[in-house]
Image 1 (cartoon, rainbow, N blue to C red):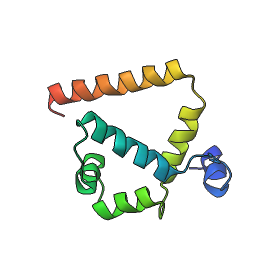
Image 2: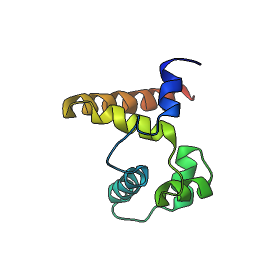
Image 3: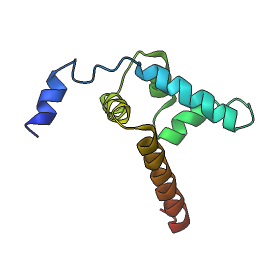
Length: 104
């Protein structure tokens, strides 16, 4: 695929986002634990939810690896207003609930 995707792939500054990817994974992990009444959630469990290996999740959390798609998503979310982000999250939740009831 040529064009803008190639430009982004070849430009390390294209996703120059001040927050690191591992910060996002740590924030989300902690938020999930808080939602779970403060009970710890294992890295293995979080990796399973993401559909990745525990080793990959550990690498993401420690910053040893930073998946480009996550960096791109963070950049796009950073460009949205708070209300737009809430609308996106609600839509994702709705689609997940619909998927759960459809059995997919």
